Image (tube, rainbow, N blue to C red; front, side):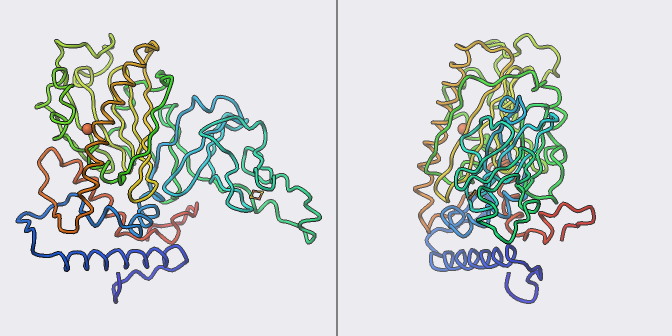
Length: 410
Ligand code: FES
Ligand SMILES: [Fe+2]
């Protein structure tokens, strides 16, 4: 990034992350030079490199250049039935809140009090009535985000206080298929529909609005890097070996691997004589009735749609070697016992993946390790790694967060 071609953008955020990206590339050069010669790789690989795993500066840069410009899944409308119902979430490092408004619309804000850094709402979801009151010094915000109360205002701010300028900071929210809530910090990112364009028509067909949430989520934190998990989620090659208990239900060698834009998809046809997964549905095309998909919505969501079920697994990066996995399943009239059975299967599948990936994490500490070439069925993983690297190489636009009709991407 140094030298005459360095971007000329300015401002505190951009300057700081240029500094970060310089440090990251310098560290990579040093790592490569000093460990050269032990392992030769005859074929170049686009897969995740060991120096991309434990570097905290790189991780900080990802929170800005990947997450701050992406649409991230935050929850669903089951937590947003009445005005004042809210759910909270995280976009990279940034906590956010989504609240149902009195007019029925849904608004999103940064979940930071404008006074100090406190979250104005705690817990994954809840109901706040007409106002959100910050727990630290009790500033109060109306559910539309405006600051409506400062305790002891004349005594604390004797010169007056411009309350109208200190409302909660709004973010973009999309309620997709009248059910799934996504948020985006950037004003320059494409709209959600364009973000998921290659999947959009198929998802329109599932009727997700009619699906309801299973009675519990899975929520665990692992000693893994979010990109190692992303690579595993998009790897159609390991499935037959790591999840071999499922082999009798699948036609594994007929998997179809697709990737385009910011989405990926691995189609997994089932052994139809072993189980009928249609649930009696006939309103979907044949491919969709005869198998399920392991999809990916960049940067961190793995949706697995079945004809009667939608599994979502989101990887929240916490630190270079810590990732929280939140899994939620939705289904069409699925009885409680069957919900529990499906949750246990998912728990097992997640455990098979996270155990393998945790092992990889240990080995990725080695500066001598060099990455092997991707097979055809790791094409999705390579695609996601390219998206991450492209974002990392592109500074945020100077107007990235400005909601203005005249703004342009730089
Ligand atoms: S941090 Fe919210 S009122 Fe002080
Ligand atoms: Fe897996």
